[in-house]
Amino acid sequence: MKKFLIFLFILALVIPVSAEMAWSVKGKPDANWWRGSVDNGKDTALLWARSVEDVIEDSTSFIWVSPDGNDTNGEGSLLMPYGTITKALASVTSAKLKIMVLPGEYSEVDIVWPNTSGIEITGIGNVSIVQATDAATPVIKIQPTSTASWSASISGIGIISDYTDGTCIDVNNIGLGSGKKINLYLNNVSLSNKAATDKSLIINGVAATAGAIRVYVSGNYNTWEGIVDFTTTNTGDRLRIYNTRLIGAITMNEAIASELTFINCSLAAPTVHSDLLLTNINCWHESDADPDVYTSYADAFSS
Image (cartoon, rainbow, N blue to C red; front, side, top):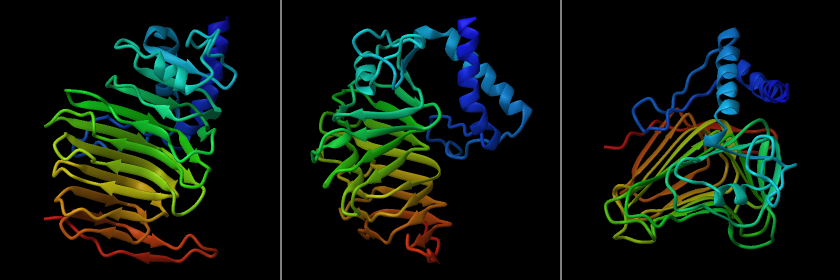
């Protein structure tokens, strides 16, 4: 009976979202990975129902987090969840890489992503991570030490850095082996900063001899408020953003032929080095004023 009630609770959270749009990302950067799929009505509800039931049954594969959870007495299960994402990340194993985050606001202090590859964090319902301390450190720091290619995924979560000089996500390659890749997938993620001069996303190729950093963003017109700062040192570096409102500045100033792609995005005026391989398709400038003023960008294709 208890499991059935939990099933109904989670189903109530996900069906309203799925009735509007069931967004499915394959997790692979192939030609169609960003498109997702839209399936309205009864079939979508049944699909979500099966998915939720699988999640409840397969408790050995998931770590659960809730605002009402407890890091000391919790077990990371659906019935006894942890209280912070930091604790959940510290509890991942090679067999348990999926973290499910129940609705609510999570006050976290400097989340440092583990070295383990393949971790997926998924928000269910309305989930936000808020920087708990007034420090010029990122809400989430991703700096894997790895001799192999490495991946991570964040889905359905808002990340808020509400302090001066704050950063939402910082990813760098200083510990990555030569010729390897960091693949970071951000799906339906919103990034919020206190000031326009703060950073929503830093991609920092600090080690020229290390591997490439590749970030794939798929949104449902989620808003990113701060600066996107792309420091590239590797021709294999890549930033692809689809269906996202980027109302902060975009800076990429290195003379490296790395890929930068925007499709169906609202953009602030990018500052981009001429050597960068820039593609923007169906993009526009948004003043973020009242009333808003929209100006279309001419499509550009990297050669």
